[in-house]
Length: 197
Image 1 (cartoon, rainbow, N blue to C red):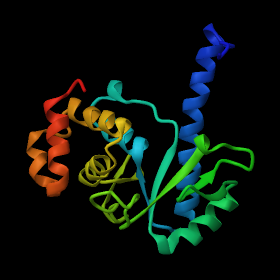
Image 2: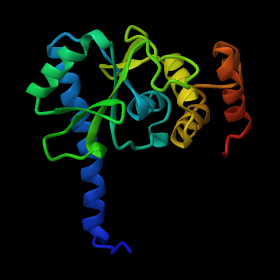
Image 3: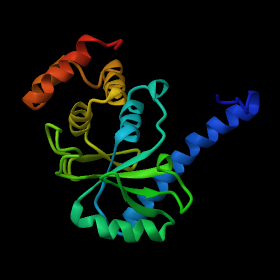
Image 4: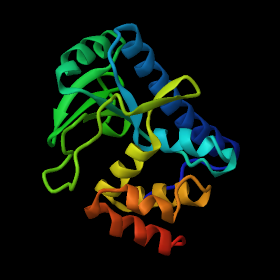
């Protein structure tokens, strides 16, 4: 059984700290990759945040980790750049990640998605290339169409929630269905038809 240790102001401070740590981690990753002139794109929950914030800041949902799209040929350069910035590279359970220091957990990691490759063998489409991006708030972010494909491909609970966030603010609607690869179209149709899950 879990014992509740924090209440009131102390609890709010912990929540605030958790959010700030993710923002700081993302900023340090971007700074290191930019300084080394490594092409990348922010993907995952942070990309969803950036796109949703373009329309409605009140609809932005927090995320606990950082996901970065990199080309496989740039991975060693990224390892060098991020190691110099204090991150620790790990390859675990088939995933490349950078822990935020030697004592950090995988929950505090920067997860790498390899451009042009399938994250899992059973995924219907590969990840996009890093060139499929836009600058949002000066952050190199995967394009909205590529992000929707990625979320439809993974289609876990959190991906469906993220897709509903995009539809709720009007960034994605039924006209997007035909823009997706055939295998992903029924998934987007499901999201459009079940806005409340």
